[in-house]
Image (cartoon, rainbow, N blue to C red; front, side, top):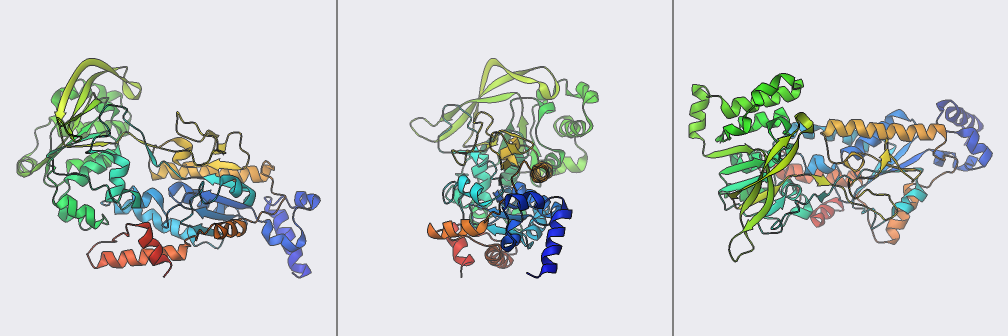
Length: 494
C-alpha cells in the first residue's frame, strides 16, 4: 500500500469517528499490514426480517462495518418466506430490500449453517467484534391441556409451515376430512389459517402455496371454522385488514353469537381509533342485517366462519377407543376489568364443540440456542436492554428473540434498527473492544470446512430462487417452492 493511500485510510478512520484508530495504534492491535482487516466485523444469526433489518441499518450507518449472516436453512428470509400467508404477496415485497442488503459488498450470506450445532456462539464471538442473535421463535407454546397430542391437533406454526413449504413441516399432511375446524387464538395468524382453510381453490392456485397443500385443500371437507378466544370482542388480537378479508371471503358467511357482543356498542366511544374501527366492523358483521346484495351472497355461501369469545380450551376430546380427536371442551369465561387489561376468569361452566381438526394459534416461542447464551425460559426471550444481551459483552439480539413474538414486520424493523444503533453506540463509546482485528468469516469458513459443512452463498440461493420461479411459471403461480433441504442443496450446488 502506497504512503498516500495509507495516510488517506488513516485519515478516513480518524474522521469517521467510529474507528478508534488512536486506541488501536497504542494497543498495537492493527498493524499496517492488516489495516483492511480492522473494519468492524458483525455476525448475525438468522436471516429473517430481524436479521436483515439489523444488517441493513449497520451497513447504511457505518461505512466500514462488514456483516455476515448465518442461516440454518439453505434459503433466506425466515418468516417472510415461511410465515406470511400465500394470498398476501404484497407483504413479501420486503424481500427486494433484503436482497439489496445481501448483495451489498460488505454483506455475506452463509446458508445451511446450523449455529449451536455446526459452530458455537463462543467460536463466533472469537471471530467477530459483535454477534447478533436474530433467529426468531421456532418453538410452540403448548396449550397445557389433556388430549393436545391427539391426531388432528396441530400448532399454527406447523400448519402455516406446511402450507408455506417449510421443510420440517412437509410430512404434516393434516386430515381435512371433517366438517368443523376449531382455531384457538384470534390473532392474524389464526385468521390466516381460517382463510386458507376456507378460500376457494381458484384463488389459492394463483399464489405460491405448495402443490401438495393445494391438492389436500381441493379434497378438504372443512366447511365451518370457529375462531376461539378467551376474552371478548374488544380484546381481539387481529388487525382490521385481516378481519375485512374474512368478511369479504368469497363463498363464506359469518356465523356469530349475538350475546357475545352485549355491552360492546356502549364501550365503543372510549376505544382508541384503530380498535374502535375494528370493533365497529365486527359489530356490523355480527349484528346488522346485511343489504340485499350481501344477503344474496351469504345465502349462496357453502362455508361459514365465526368468532367464539369468552372460551378457553380445557380438554381435547378423543373418539372412544381411538387416538383421534372428536371435539374440544371449552371453559366459559367472564371478564374482570375492561379494555386491554381485562382478565378472563372461569365461570365453572363448560361446553363441548364437536370437531375433527384443532389448530392452536396461541403464540410462537423462542428456544435457547447455546448453553453459553443467557435465556429467560419463562418469557422465552434472551434477557436484554435495547438489544444488548445482559451479562454478555459483544452479544446482542433483535426480533422476536428480543421482544417475544409480537407485532408485524414493521415492528420488527424498528426494534432491529434499535439493536443496530446499540451496536454502533458501543463501537463509538469503546464498550465494544475494536482494538484487535478479527478474522470474521475467514476463520469460521475454515472451521466449517473442517467439520464437513458447506455453506450456501447468496448466489447459490439465487439459483434456487430461479428454479422455483420457473416451476411456478409453468403452473401459472409466482413460485413453486422446493420442499426439501436435499432438493435445495442439489439445485444450489449444480
